[in-house]
Image (tube, rainbow, N blue to C red):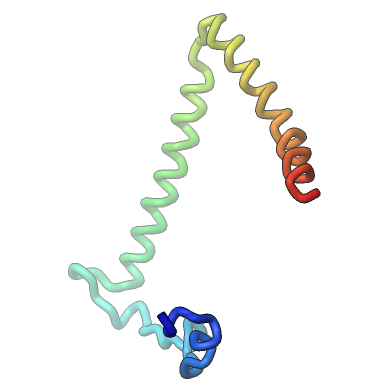
Length: 98
């Protein structure tokens, strides 16, 4: 149980190094699955961009779909509740702090 006390935790050896001290290899010198690191990074960026385009196109298609009247009314009620949420949350947090 002594090793869990805060005073002993700070008495440990100081930590040298960290993310700032990491030495990264050149992307061209690394090969993954027959591709250079640079090519793999570029392919990943292309896939991410295609995913973003797909998401935006799908969002626009779904937004333009017809909505049933009761669902539109329910959505309007929920959006109204969400707009009031920050006010109620702020009041609740202030009440807890006092």
